[in-house]
Length: 326
Ligand code: 5GP
Ligand code: MN
Image: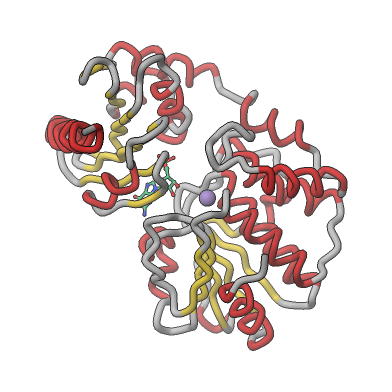
């Protein structure tokens, strides 16, 4: 499966020696995985790589040794690299402070989000790909990079997390074949799974309990939403990072098609996460509010009070659900 984007990326890599490889703010498993896999691969062909993310290191990946290579929220000098590669980011603002390098050095964007409008100077966009990590796998295979167990484990992580450990609709036979290849090369599946799924702090359960008390169900139980305030985070000893998995709990409820979780980041800064099960287009909804993502998982940030955000977004979601259902 070679496509134009991949050929373009090869040419780009040949053109330069030193790369700043950027992931998105609030990185997830796919972001960390695709960023590190690309860094490993490019270093094997004697390229210099600075992997960077403009966020603090996520606690869940604390003991994931390869992550120590990533520069988190670091100041990076324009003179230290020749060109940029951005992974898993559907919009420029996902680069955080590194967005300021756009226009000063070329930027090649590798992404799989359906809401990506090819905002890079050069782009490899594959909305069929399960994950950015899958795209990096295809690219490194094409380059002839040999996989060792560390690279295989790092690369598998993003495929595991973006497919919900092989249970979302983006889990194809092809994804399973790639996973099998990586396991053959020594990827430690259970290490990754345990790190992501069995690494919860007990405080997250306290937060889940608080969030559960605020659940609202409408549209005959097909739309569920809830919220987390700064006060609830404080009371349970959590940060907004601990709220990341809770949207999945809302979607897991019987009869629910769409789940929305509002998390307060500041007095008038609300992060909104959207999930759907079978038919509702979350990507379209997130775009309406300046965000992005996939059809079954998307998000945005609103700069207003919690009450305003809930009122507005729930109303829009209800209207869109009623319209799409017809
Ligand atoms: P989550 O709800 O887990 O934060 O995000 C779900 C999906 O939506 C991810 O694929 C993520 O990249 C995307 N997403 C979340 N928030 C934003 C946002 O503010 N802007 C954009 N462009 N995408 C977002
Ligand atoms: Mn991804």
